[in-house]
Image 1 (cartoon, helix red, strand yellow):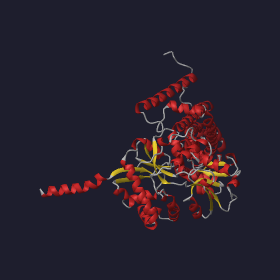
Image 2 (tube, rainbow over the protein chains, first blue to last red; image 1 turned 90 degrees about the horizontal axis):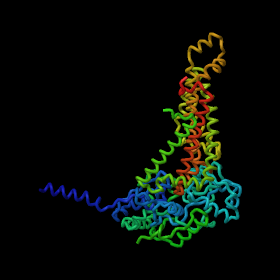
Image 3 (spheres, each protein chain N blue to C red; image 1 turned 180 degrees about the horizontal axis):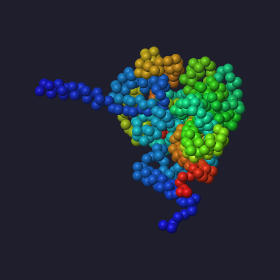
Image 4 (cartoon, rainbow over the protein chains, first blue to last red; image 1 turned 120 degrees about the horizontal axis):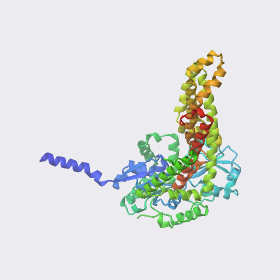
Amino acid sequence: MKRLAAALVALGLSLSPAAAADKLTVLLDWFVNPDHAPLVIAKQNGLFEKHGLDVELVEPADPNAPPRLVGAKQADVAVTYQPNLYLQVQEGVPVVRFGTLVDTPLNSLLVLKDGPVKSIADLKGKKVGYSISGFEDALMGVMLENAGLSAKDVEMVNVNFALTQALMAKQVDGVIGAFRNFEPTQVKIAGGTSTVFFPEEHGVPLYDELIYVAHKDSLGDDRLKRFLAAGQEATVQLLNHPEESWKAFTKAYPKLDDELNTAAWAATLPRFAKQPGLLDRARYEGFGAFMKERGLITAAPALDSFAVEIR
Amino acid sequence: MNLRLPAPAASVLRAIVTAAVLLSAWWAGIKLFGPPPFILPGPERVFAAILKNHVYLFDNALVTLQEILLGLFAGTVLGVSAALLVASSETMRRWLLPLLVLSQVLPVFAIAPLLVVWFGYGLASKIVMTTIIIFFPITSAFQDGLRRTDPGLLDLARLHGASRLQTLRLLKVPSALPSLASGLRVAIAAAPIGAVVGEWVGASSGLGYVMLNANARAQTDVLFAALLILGLVAAVLWFTLDAALARLIPWSDDRRPS
């Protein structure tokens, strides 16, 4: 009888944490890197657990796949980009933005400092490399027009993921789609120095670089609310204790403890959304109008159909 | 059974029947499993995408076709030369063959980004990529053919005092041409892969570029449209080459009973 009771207690002990924690699969936009710090810290420091979540972070093979996988109910949450959300919604992918990870653009135009390009206007007749995101024509177009040029003045070349290599090998005179918190350090490590042009300083409306999307049928799911709460607490820890957080981050991903990611860590911290659940309606509507004006979407969809606040 | 059609008409009919069966299976699959169109679009969506984007798709298909043809040409010249070199002596064969095999084991996908940095983002890197992919089947098949010349004929040639060059030109090469033709058939089926891999790692046009762009914009129908056109281009190339080879090397045609 005693043994049975002990077994039951043991069973109860082993079951209770598992029963309390709800599984949640999060598809990242890229390999784990400092952009995902709040998620890694929330997992590493037990914040997800505190909110009863057992979160699995999954790295994608293709940065464009996660929203579609969530749309097909293969995962719960995807990390994606605000500009791409409009394209996905237009193609009928049933996803809705419910949170923000990084609330400024990270995208930037990078040129070599000792090269011929000192201002965007100097790009006339030059080559710009990009990594296909579906959005670079619009980004580059506006930046060029802002400098008195037109899209025809620059030759755009897809260099896939080799942005830094293409720039350093002087195959191109500039690259767009470079993340301001990574590529400048990468150029530095490769022995160069770069100048960064920020899209939002050259005519592109502000947008959220990294957002969370979920299937539109799952917006009532309580797990999403808890996911955001844990993310917000993690961001507070990150900002208040950057050193300890970096230690926790590299403990979870020892491979990332290098020069590039150390620099990226410092450059990324100020970019995280301090209130991940907040929705800036004017920003989302304005960006929709911008996407339509640049011919990327045929009509700006109603805001509530693709971006919400869950409170 | 007196329904026999003339050969070209019969092959056109076969192509139509095959296409119809495949399309019906695709359509039925969509109806049966109902996947959302952003995962797998139905044929009607893909044809609508082709109609809507026909100029864009056609222009980019031309780019890819050009890369395939130039790559095929370069790969064939290189492959045939390598085969002649390998077949020229047993010593050459022992030294060169391992190198050729090694060139084939390299995963092109892994070195593709480097090729682009070396040869630039234009046509050259795609031609190099296609050449790398196809030259081995050609070399392998042709040198195999060169080694299989009827020994009786070779003895006869030696008896008549034929020079090495004469033996090669009049006996070895003609009897190896059917093998070369098999190599070419493999090559032409693989060539589009080379061109598309090249476009994948860096290009501003071509069907591979169209697919990447459509993927980034969640336009699965355009992606499938590009795939369909690539398949069509490859099929037309293959059957054209097959027919041309059958005509140029009639002694290779073992399908027709003599």
